[in-house]
Image (cartoon, rainbow over all chains, first blue to last red; front, side, top):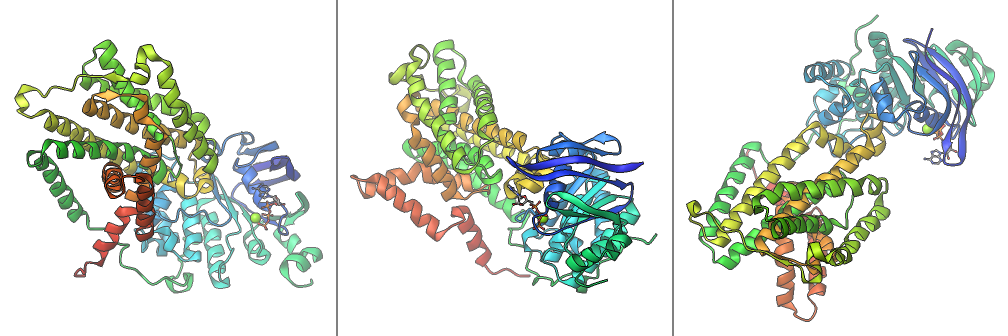
Length: 238
Length: 339
Ligand SMILES: Nc1ncnc2c1ncn2[C@@H]1O[C@H](COP(=O)(O)OP(=O)(O)OP(=O)(O)O)[C@@H](O)[C@H]1O
Ligand SMILES: [Mg+2]
């Protein structure tokens, strides 16, 4: 039984269609990587899943229909979206950023204990709690963005290019943590990533999106072994 | 399964130079300063001549209106060029209730607040779907429409002649003169308004407003319903403006359409920006600005007070881009402190 089912998903901006019938599924607790060139519609796909753009087709999470619902309803149903460019609330403190992640939740004590859980993944955040989030480094902001998303206690975590603008070492660290989160919390993850190598390293399934269509699907190993993918996204020939 | 992986602080990121906790005044000092300010505010009307007491009363009235405008502009990141209209709605609600229905004036305060809130909510629903210049234009239109509207419903509003009202009589137990009584009414309302605004901003709602201001997309995926929070911010800020307008009516004892032209709306917004957006002291400084700078400009150059007023705004924004509140904050940080 698949946790996330995306069927015949069409989405776009105004009259411009970007996704033309995307179809894939993700099993509960798995990591799914979406690869593809610039402008393929990867960001749009994540936005469609979290209700930020108008869609046709169906999206269900754990059997619950998501398509056609508003972003705040989808957040309440357990979808946390780390947007492209991190979406840091710059002037607010790190702590306020994290607490905003739990905006749709009630129960202060639970939220407080979840904050502590976030610090075990990202100890650096704990040392910066009262600092304006805009003064964090790029890597720290990305950690904050992921930590903030976890504050929702998501069933489904959507990550849009977490490696953007980060040093390779930091990126590797970040993916290691995402993998640990996935293992610990059994959170289903959809990750869009330019760094195909790292993404395939933590994913079970992967799909290649080109001009709004999925042109290749398979297990991470299959995708890694594909000659076309290797040339376009991994930078070497098989 | 492994436990949560820790990020090694040294490899995680090029850590920025650790700053001293970004410069807020310690809470204790803030309370002391606030208490002193309040003591001075209570003491002042017994030391000043009635005209100066009246001027301070008007500063408080404008401060309440700016406090509301600050919720919308400084905290929720939206703009309104029409807040004079909600000020007028509060003023007229109070005036009409007292004049036509003989409602005791103190009772008109909650009613004026409610009417301004409801009108703000009604106008906010469509207006808050717009942004930037479009929102500025639509709110400006609200202010422009109001004057002819007030003139039109003459039986209720007194038309262009306006309404003249009896001034509130200070109760005998207070032993206060009229100007002092009005001052304390305004002070009481202002303190209440500040407490309401401060607790609103500290709550989950305040955090949501800041999120909307700082990053709409991120706020939305976090589950903040943008249209609801923007509309609520608009309604609340209209409510504060309405409350200020109500106290204005008590103090001035006269309302007419020409007291609430577009000019008032623009002066309010200018006062807020000059006072300092997004801070709690900004509205008080802005209130001083709105009250005194137009008359100071008049003194400097009788022929073109508008020019002087405009130049003063430009000057303040040049010297203190964060407004007067920001300037004060910068000066306080310059004072050397023991670590
Ligand atoms: N807000 C928008 N309004 C209109 N068109 C948009 C908007 N955002 C994206 N598009 C268009 O949608 C298409 C897909 O964009 P999208 O951001 O989804 O690509 P992407 O795969 O995430 O690319 P990248 O790898 O560069 O981030 C592009 O042609 C882009 O021009
Ligand atoms: Mg993208």
